[in-house]
Amino acid sequence: MSSFFVMSLLFGLIFGQTASLCAPSEYTIHVEKRECAYCLAINTTICAGFCMTRDSNGKKLLLKSALSQNVCTYKEMLYRTALIPGCPHHTIPYYSYPVAVSCKCGKCNTDYSDCVHERVRTNYCTKPQKLCNL
Image 1 (cartoon, rainbow, N blue to C red):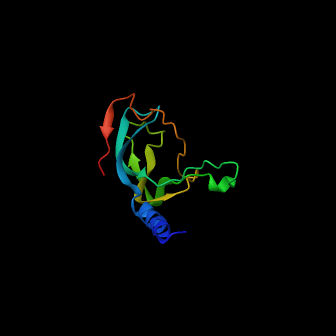
Image 2 (cartoon, rainbow, N blue to C red):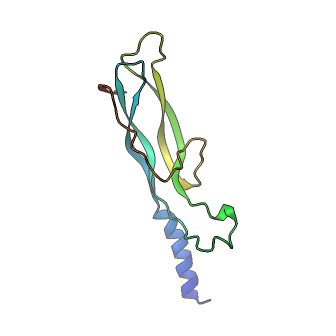
Image 3 (cartoon, rainbow, N blue to C red):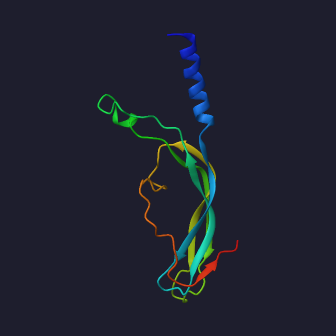
């Protein structure tokens, strides 16, 4: 192997990790309960962005664990709780939601992340909207 090839490979590996644009991003969640009068719009942060991945053309030659691609996922997160307005007394009016503190490129963990590629548009209100002020 030529020294140019080895240096290019090392540069690509090092630059690939720094070029990953995975970071907390502002996002609005719309929350409503059937019993409550209002829909609550909550401003939070989620992990979003680009992570370097590898093309797995040799699917038959690689182990199944080598085929999973990196995604932008939570490195550190915390939960906050909001009060949904207009709920009757017999209903629990609280909603807990995640806030991304920091993010990383890694394997998707289905315990706390939605790893589906296709996104269905369900983030909307069917009731009058209130903004969550924290």
